[in-house]
Image (cartoon, rainbow over all chains, first blue to last red; front, side, top):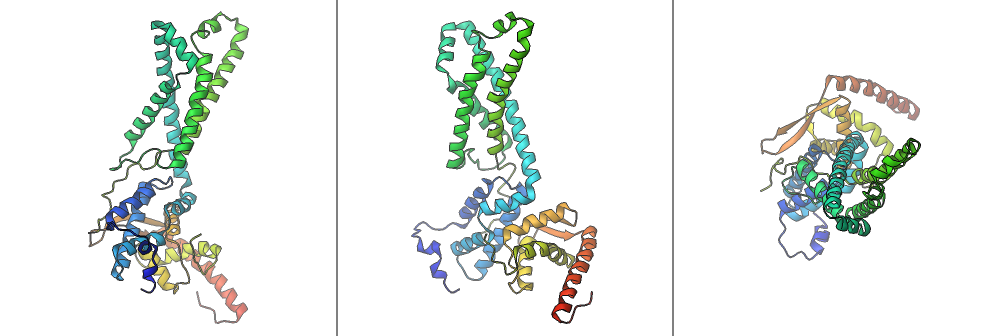
Length: 253
Length: 117
């Protein structure tokens, strides 16, 4: 093939030996990090990639060149993902909604648990609880939430190789920002509104006329501080490699 | 994007359905083979991007025009084979009539011998 000496993989000084199966595995992981593929889609695309590699190998190219050309022909995972999004939007949204619902439920549980913990804390050591409220012990909530997310993910992901939830830097920064906003606003909102110092007792002591606006206020605050950030969180960062086994496709020797 | 199609984007999109149905009417096939067939048939003039083929196939499948099944080749490699359904054959007949109508009209205008349907 003319011009094969100009392939970028050869220009790059790559001193480690090229391992085809490792390269395919990396490619597969890149694909798994994209949101729009069903496990079956990825399996199909990988079969396609392997067919293309075989074709180039039969034309006399080495493993590295074949992999590089096949990857070019099939397209970047990002581009493939865009193409699939047009066709798969229903499935993608169904999946997002599932994670949204799961997120809301687990967040509710977290809220209940932390509230119970705070009540107990106040009952046992009021001084420590006041410190908790003043300083905003946000990392307690953060730890619970993060553990919850990781557990929820571990439960549903059946990949042989775990892919970290914050797979790339962009997603990491964005989700951390959302997480911090979420936790900060929760501290300010819920904890202050239903805090034990001026919480249920003061609401009960108020007349009936004050109940409705107070409840409304509570509900709105609740929606604003807990549900809305979660919708953002779960919509934009659904876990992405459910139910895919790397043994599905034939291996190249 | 990464398409180097000689045909315009609209024409590629419109013609993908009759092309795929016609190929599958000739026997079951899988994505990679279909791509090669198209490239071969058009002498490279219809250059589909690999990424575009699968969403189109999946859409045809959703519409009930084709069906799919995973099968292992002799080499042990698994591929998703597509085959045409009876609904697909009916759709192909309609497509054929429509494309020939366009084709024949253009032939008359350009004074080329039309193809019988």
